[in-house]
Image (cartoon, rainbow, N blue to C red):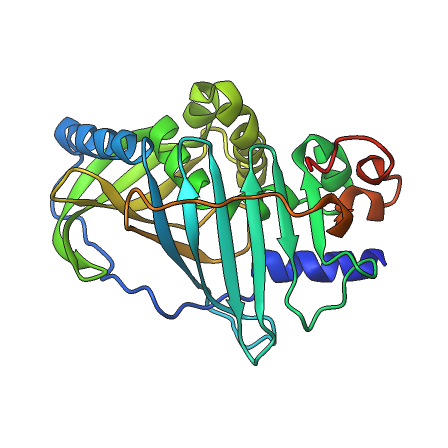
Length: 290
């Protein structure tokens, strides 16, 4: 059973990811870092964080070909929550993975080709409060899962941006935008994290810091800002996630987001399937968030 759980997690985190669909020319640095460029990125990120939007997500990694290779993902995200829904499409006809991100928790439903962990319960629930269990039994779990939550990269930009260079005017998803290359300090982001959002993503930032092995770890994020001053795209290689390079394209701002919890009766708690886990969610507790 545990082996099956880890197989499902491997599907989720796209460890053999490749990219198709969303396309954007990789920006080149055309000027040194400047306070103006940094201010533009910070302001655009702050503007987007007050909105909802639909998104497309693609992955690029040098190795590919696994049967579970995802072609891309799409969904809707409420950056104010944050909450999101995510549909990941897999190659070779294996179907799509459904995900619902809520503060501190994630629900996921593997493709129909993957048997459920328990009969009649197609959804799996993970509570990030159980991080100690995941670190022991599946160390990259938190960063891998949250890296494909589109809200995480945007919050990382908002909290940790340290320097930025303008990289010219480009076409991003058919829209004119200005590209920027941003250096993000992971420790700065973690120190700036606050409130419910900080609790949700602080664990992910801590995992990235640990995985980096550096004294002052940073990550480079490419960002695209439209003519209305909104962040409309980002590209990053999450530290320690093993999912390759992730590109997020935002569109249709103001879109409705239906990040609803699945019915309790259709959910199994992932922590209960890990050695030493307790199935609190299915025995009267509220760990499944349902």
